[in-house]
Length: 255
Image: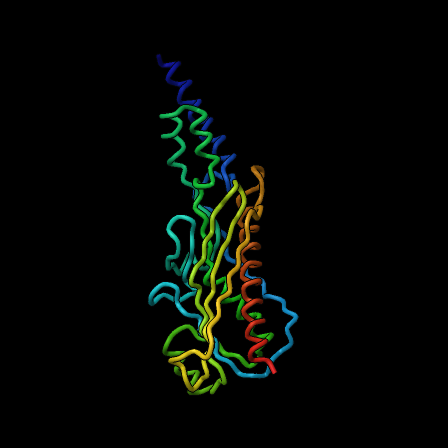
């Protein structure tokens, strides 16, 4: 009996290890994988416009700054000042051993190789803000930005912009499907006001963008490699959204 019990425990341990090595988004044994967020400034071919505008980044979550709003594939948006400055994923190892015990080696391995096994954490609020602002300064070099009622009112009085633009991430989704492939989807709402009339927008438009099946690596890729690709894909996604918004504004406000 002792030898049988030992072999069973060893088998469970080996299956769990193999499942971890084969699981989506990572190969290391630490369940939490994060790296500092890296933002790449966007490039644009739009010529600069001299008109002064004020851009307000509205909150997705009530009373929470967009820059500190983070999304995952489990619970959706949440506010977290620390998570908003890093990007990565968390793997739920707790499902491996129970699945192996109940269903055997095959069940344990299957659980470890399902996309749902990984919680993907994308600080999209900060990514979008910083990418968009980098493009905004190129297209509207006289622009200003703000993120709350107080700063908006102050800059409307002191800077006297011609237009007020309120941007809001109304929807953002991230999921992994198939294994080791990232999918992103977002809807942005843009309201443009004359600076003297901030209670009724002059016009409103939405920008939607989606990317699917973006490979972030293979079973031999390190967790650091996965995170680099996640960062790159998320940055590129925000770049496309920003370009579309700025192009729309440029056509309406450009000289």
